[in-house]
Image (cartoon, rainbow, N blue to C red):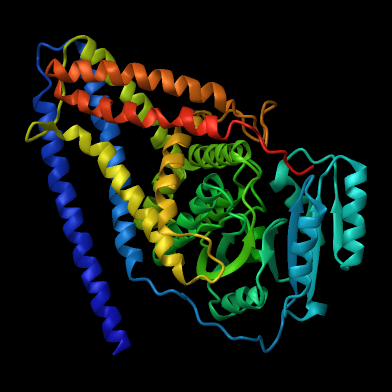
Length: 519
């Protein structure tokens, strides 16, 4: 009966996906046809070229929205626990655990190391490594004392200039086990998680790694909730659908790998700030897949303050965009990955580049309207269908957030609730403008790990950007409303987009005081 029920569910899902796909194809056909018909022969050449570029960007955004909607269908009926594995292993293989640090709070680190040592894994098979490139010797001495207290290996190289990935590659030769797990210093492993991950890899022998879920604690204000909910969306929605499509991504921590797969894929990539998604892509291109378990693997802390959260998000966005730039041709043409995997990676790594496109796309309408040129695409009543672009993206994003919280409802450690959703959406909207330059830099291949100007924790001038956003949004809103009154129906897009620029300043003002970071 259970198998029959799952078949019926899959059938309904496939029908729903076909309906959405058919609707989108028909809509896009009429949308593009209407846009091309509207390109008047009297238009000057630059206006025609500009409108064609706009249509191309709209198609990319619609593709992004389509992949999100199809992902939502995939995950709605997913089981809460994706895998059933033995409570105990009959035979415990050797397991290495890496905890990479740099200038971290020794008390937070100790809680993580203690939790690793308290795991039910056979202790003589468990080899723990603290991997450190902290320049200050007084801090290093504290980590040495901690490593001795808990009988863990301490690997130290203050000359490392290749950030986290470089330090991990320095440490790899010291690790000799069949399996290797990674944890961030502030991610406290949950009881039994090491046994759980190794058991999965033994049970599913074709997979190179297992990624478990990370969740967060001490969500004392809405900016912390926003930062943590970004992770929740990734694990509860993105990873679930990627699991179904055999395109699971490593999230940098709380995961376990077959060591030989890392070696055969060239080690830990050092080219970008997001060695995790780059490593996953390398594995995929070498024929290795990851698997996702929805079990909570660790409970951690979000960055300490909005400044640090934006800096982290800037690094992630830059790294994803940079990884896409370096692997774009492979993602398009490699015969080692299928269409679904290709789509998953292009969609995920392309999130920030698409955001950049959207900002340039908005501005591109200004010269058209200044010359009295309207380009409304299809008309739906008295409204231009061009307004559906931001509306579709907004609706799908809200659904993603709702689904993430809903899937997390049975997590006993969860600090999320639906009442946090409005505040989360405001901060998410406000933060887009603060990180859009990361997409530009990533696509251009500048400010990365190998650049002299590359920085792991980059200072983002959020006050300056917030003020700029307010000024631009106000001017654009007033001007767009004026154009709309003049009969330029496509100006509704600028009215909507200008509105999204306004919250940035107020969010920045609320969180304008940086919180002192750990040493």
